[in-house]
Length: 250
Ligand code: NI
Image 1 (cartoon, rainbow, N blue to C red):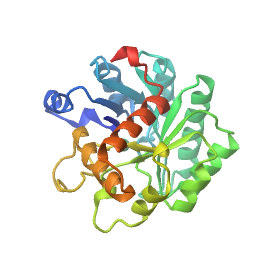
Image 2 (tube, rainbow, N blue to C red; image 1 turned 135 degrees about the vertical axis):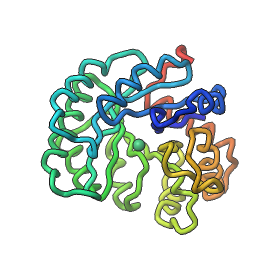
Image 3 (cartoon, helix red, strand yellow; image 1 turned 180 degrees about the vertical axis):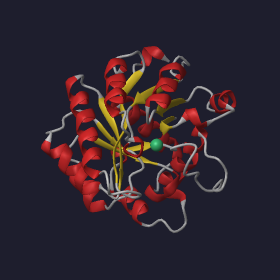
Image 4 (cartoon, rainbow, N blue to C red; image 1 turned 90 degrees about the vertical axis):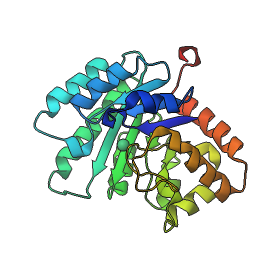
């Protein structure tokens, strides 16, 4: 299994979390300078890869320095992409223009150095789509924790895209995401936890951890009427392809 999206900087008991994953792989994402520096260190562990980026909620006055740091380290070993980056209009709409500029600059950097991107998009899916379109974005894209409509998901298929599916899928009242998982071929889906957030059932209320992608896989299997082994096999292949993981490193 590969947890394609987690935040390993948010654990005091990281050794325990890593041991629980055994030989399974984790891709941890930075959101600002501090967490990006953590990512550069933690990828020394054989089963961990990383992405570095400036998250829309972490946009601040220091962004030029933040962007420079990302550019300087984007080709470091086991840094497989830029993320998480994107747009988030949920809490504030005041800095939308700045969010867009910073998102675009990181996408342009990704194009320049041929790196994939991990995108966070909350209440902003149309702008996310429009920006990728404007830039004629050709690198691989992961829309992490996808939460918009099936119709929008289909429009994104014009990009080399995959959708990160996490704990939300297991929530009892979640209908939209279940429909998306049912309709989209397994080839477009990735397992992710967004740990330590969004814990799946049956552990909702506890702190999430990468191992719990197994329960997301079980839910996908149930929705699609296939075996969980098949979900694990195909989503692992998808992750290796989308993040261009080099098998010789693990
Ligand atoms: Ni995240």
